[in-house]
Image (cartoon, rainbow, N blue to C red; front, top):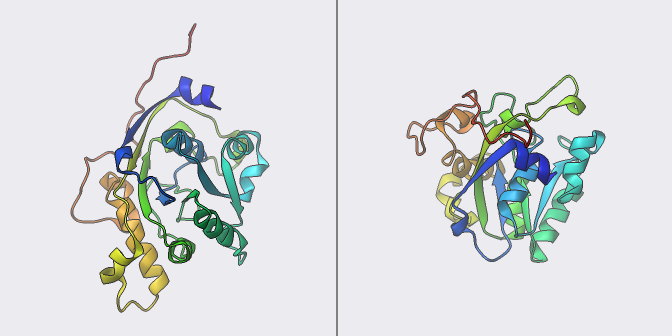
Length: 230
């Protein structure tokens, strides 16, 4: 797996110096089946458990990706809460967890409204939350809705940006009085992810005040050195 990433991508990691030396809940936007392994590489040598959909066990490449990292499998859009309980237990045991709160890959590159499960994990675990912004994987391994097993890798530049860790208590002002407090909490968390993303990636969490330079999901791929002999 590392060889494929080494040959086909360049990786830029920003903000890693902000990470705390304690268990954290990482929350990240979701663009591609390449996201998990890309983030694992960015986080090394830190050990992180990833929540991933069970369907990733269905193809060779995605199965290899889940086997290469510590994985807690979930069934998206189901009533099964056991994986969420396992995530909380993992955090309380001293390990970090990463979740893609949107519950699926964005087909446009822009954020979609996140599912409320992340708020449940955050409240019960009580650990710092780290927003993470990922760009470029939608070009490295584009989505093929016809057959996930046929998704191919291309050359691309990948960027992982870590934001300032925060705690649930810091979001109180944004969630007070909300009819659906769990969704309000989830949305407040995701706004921290959106702030780290280029404006065109922010989607459902777009703001009128951009905080990073514009970078469109459809921009041309950044070239990296070609493979030996090619």
